[in-house]
Length: 120
Image 1 (spheres, rainbow, N blue to C red):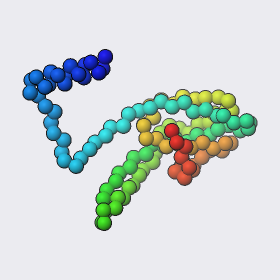
Image 2: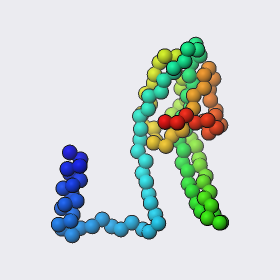
Image 3: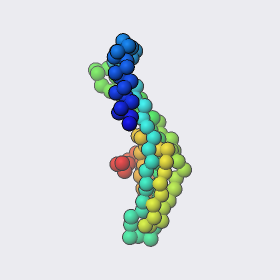
Image 4: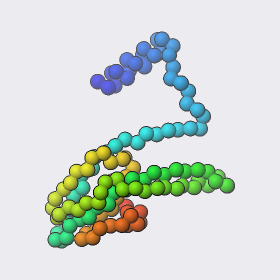
């Protein structure tokens, strides 16, 4: 259905002579979506899995010699939580570019997330 509507809008635009405004050169803006992720604690140990999820907001700029410099700020996406062995928890409204880590039996620190993020 969405594809049909988009095709119809493009066809209408082509016949009316309408065109989207041109984007400024060398500029791209990307809006990242939200995601829902299910976390689990798959361990034989009796200890709970402790999770810490961070939002990352990064900016890049070109510096001398054409190198890139990237600076990031990290904030908690949701309060830290723990899951008992064999259980699951679904977390909604996470930014698409969140980073997280899990530690058995102890709360991870932000440095743990940045040092060893879990791929998702």
